[in-house]
Length: 108
Image (cartoon, rainbow, N blue to C red; front, side):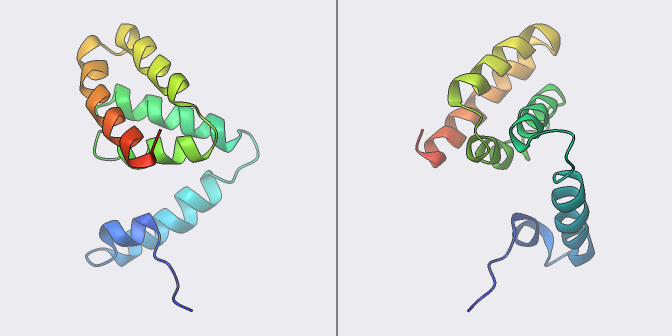
């Protein structure tokens, strides 16, 4: 049985295998598995941080993860609206097409 590659391995293991391994083991292992926040809460916080800091390259994967972790499409849209007033209108405006595509890809 073939071992399925993680998103980090698909994204950069060919160039930076140690970075992929650290992402899998530390970020998505140790940090994301800490008991202090639920996966849903971590996803919502991460999506908000990515939107607010224009990290739209990482946003589609985290929107998909958020949906899988129980964050609804409506909550994600409401997050964008809320951020428009705290992180700036352009950040929210730039996030909308990314969300649109991520929702389409997820079938929601």
